[in-house]
Amino acid sequence: MPVNRLFARFWIRGNISPPSTSKSLRFVIVVDGLLPSEGRLVPHPELHPWHKRMNRAGKLWANCASKTAVEWYLWATKSACSPAAFLASRTAKIPADTKQCWIASPYHAVVARDHVDVAPESSFDWDEQQALRLAALLNPLLEECDMILIPAGPMLLACCNKAWDVDVPGFAAISGGRLPDRQPPGKDAGDMMRLLSEIQMALAQDTKSSVSGLWFWGATGWPANHVTDSFPAVMTDESALSSVTNSELASFVVTSAAGAGDMLKANKPPRFWMLAGGGQCVLLDCRALPRLGRNVWKFGQSLSLDKIQERVFV
Image (cartoon, rainbow, N blue to C red; front, side, top):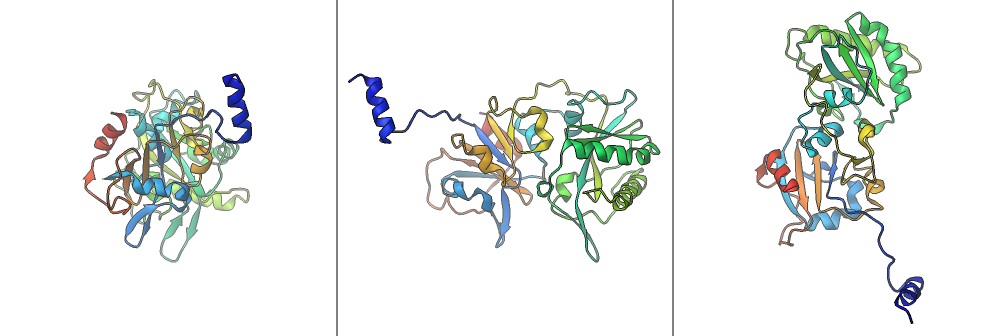
């Protein structure tokens, strides 16, 4: 019997698997992949299908500030471009007199007696149409401060014709946490906080608004350096990276824990996983030889993110 007919016969009977059409991904970054549990950090429950594989993997830990999906993407691509400059480079609508760009991140808030809780960024849907509507609603207010909101896909950029001197915490630092209760440093901090409060009041009065406020962060001068960088394709569920999303060309993934299943179901498990959360991250090397005690999720020797990056891109 010809070999190809024999192959087809066994294939149909289910005795062997058909040729795989899945692709090999080099690494996956799960931006909220670590959660606190009994004084330590453990994988997010949504990553349960890969827990056994992760438990056996080699682990390298690092302390790191919280990052958004855009920030992790730029880290993974080793780009020197800032998040605001990256988003600004995705649109041709930046006004010619712009001196500074901020990312304006919408958020949901719950007011408690003595603080304001901010819902995680991944907990609500946001699209380009909502960004366009919000810009139209708020631009009359922002124009009084020589600002304008420019949609960049589903994201919003606040473009200023002057440079504001204020050091606002990044959005990843408050997403899933609390709004800061102290004024940030900088001579324009008071004006910035008043503007953000006025935006909150305008949104509270708008019956169609689905968000509580905007958080301005990640300021960069404009024109910015490195905006001509070549940005590689990524597989992602993050709307902020929609302009570089291409599942066919991507060799890596940036995802939330909830989106990991959809991102990986048609692909071979990657060698490297980067799980982040709780001010730390861990690089999992799934090709490392098994070792006694490796399934214990205990913070080990802390490396720098640069060292972690060297390990992934060696």
